[in-house]
Amino acid sequence: MKWLVALITAVLQALLPWIAKKSRPTAEDANPDRDTRDKLRRRVRQHWLIVIPLLLTLLICGCGTRTIYVPDGTPVRLREALKDVKVWVKDANGEPVAGKMDLPEGWYALPLPEDE
Image (cartoon, rainbow, N blue to C red; front, top):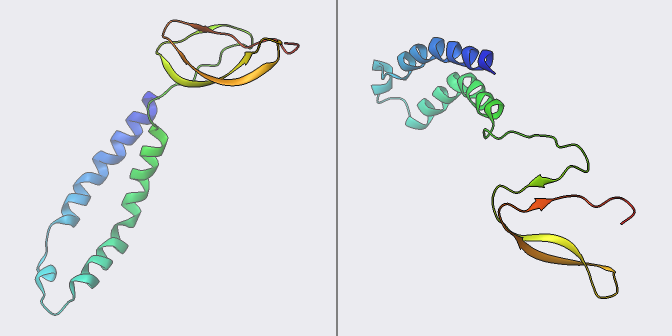
């Protein structure tokens, strides 16, 4: 992950001065003969290649979450309370019934074996 941060930093350090130079107003921008809409469209067409790496950087970085795979059948402890969790509960006859409940922080969750 460190190499990715170093790569992104290097690319941004190379591109930012160029972007700043291109974003400064020029004498051509003040030309009253040109329509403002045409000027903006031309700028978007010139700089669309800059937006793509920035969007890719955001997609690669993600939200900063991490997934940890737990072996099947291993209990896990809940770190925070969960509201309206869809669960299967057994009724008086022992038949599974769909339901909802709140799971408090600190409870353990464990999958049932296949035969249950």
